[in-house]
Length: 249
Ligand code: BV8
Image 1 (cartoon, rainbow, N blue to C red):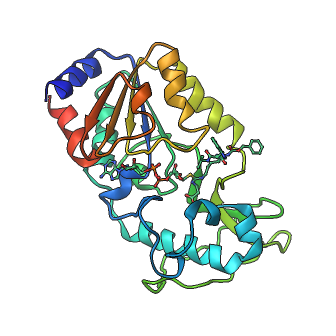
Image 2 (cartoon, rainbow, N blue to C red):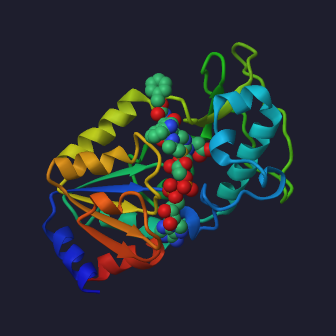
């Protein structure tokens, strides 16, 4: 508890707060994180192998079905207390930058603005060949619980296959997005690392940049993470429990 009081104190005095979120923030909205076993049709796949351009080219229907099943989960989910607390924090500090690794829109639906999505979004599909945005996704999905293969739609501009608007393993992050995140990491004086295993780069590198630039780095996670070693403080607990507490102190 003393730890939380120390952080509440740091929050009151901070100029620029950087919040860096991972799949753990959406866990309490019922959205499975990468490390939770995949279910149904994809149970036997390794997500890091499925979230690649190679997997999509090898079997577009398997991969597109997986993303549509995940998009349905997001459409059916609601932001939780962690998303709401992060949105509320923006009115408690002079400046807040929110950088997320998540591909859902729960931060936005909780009221956060100008969210930096390092790994893209489930809601922004584009053409695999010409990158033209695809606007034809249904918002009413009826994917079976155990999932199914689905042929991806075709691009209206070039006829290529539509892909999810996410950054796959082996693909570069959008440069401007990454630069904006790295800028915030270097300028912030307090960084909250919430709900991420911190295993994926270059995203996880933001905590190292913030620490090197003199910011106070605090990890919030129920389990040990790869970023505990770069943190000044580690708060053990779930995001939906810990973040609202920071607002109360
Ligand atoms: C690139 C979109 C180069 C897709 C995602 C060896 C060493 C270092 C790096 C590499 C390496 N080999 C390869 C690489 C590079 C690779 C990488 O980092 N691999 C890792 C696995 C080692 N990175 C890349 O490929 C990146 N690109 O490097 O390009 C390049 C440059 C130029 C030209 C060409 C190429 C691209 C990485 C982006 C991948 N896309 N997402 C999709 O979503 O399908 S990453 C994806 O997995 C998620 O976005 C998330 O960030 C990540 C991990 O998922 P999870 O584990 O579920 O989430 P998280 O890590 O957040 O863990 C859950 C956490 O929540 C846990 O800690 C848990 O304790 C906690 N938790 C659970 N419940 C709660 C909770 N916390 C709070 N409250 C709770 N209730």
